[in-house]
Length: 268
Ligand SMILES: Nc1ncnc2c1ncn2[C@@H]1O[C@H](COP(=O)(O)OP(=O)(O)OP(=O)(O)O)[C@@H](O)[C@H]1O
Image (cartoon, rainbow, N blue to C red):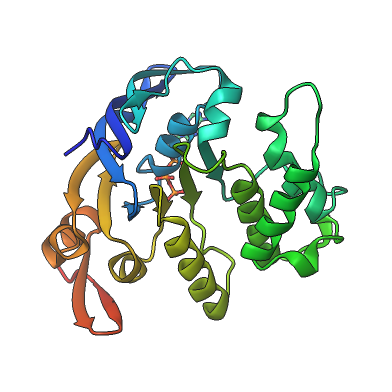
């Protein structure tokens, strides 16, 4: 059901490049206070959806449909206005390797600047964002010399620094946030994401269906640009659906400390 009053609502979103549909009439919602996992096979259109919501599609892409945050349309807002409300952490960004982590996180404040530029308040937010993402110790390091997992934390800190003033609606979109992270940091990140979802919608794409089932409140299953199912993890992630979408046999074990899913190739 789309149209969540508090949270993000995606309505009949379509994205095409040179006449090819990458996202095809997708409607789904991500309520504030919840973690929504966007899952689906490679090439399903998950990243394209996040980029369309954040308004950072390539120029040659055409799009249709609506994106609403707390009931207000984001489409048509100037890029800067949209960037104040929606923070997107991508798998790979065009990070300048010579920037230090702190300088990169400061860039997260750019959409909020007016004439005066960087303020003391911004500086405090940058330090808090670095601390929240566990990246304080990386602040003086150059991006080009960080490991994949360290870089992931800096990107997250940058998105945290981007958030608007308290009380203003915002959403956080994370594209494969657990990529490159070791198991300890995956759990740290998911605990942080849980805290961040306290007062806003958080959407994350993940390939690990067990992780989605364990840590997300809602799951949106996407295939070939379309939404196949949306709802609670146990309602969406059934062995039958996993078989039809991914073409593998899944055994789902729900335990009190999480959901483990084992996979086998389909036998003929
Ligand atoms: N800029 C682009 N121009 C043309 N086609 C694109 C562009 N970006 C993505 N695509 C295509 O759109 C489809 C959806 O890609 P997208 O990256 O959104 O999928 P995804 O679900 O995030 O995949 P993955 O799990 O592999 O990251 C793919 O077929 C991809 O090749």
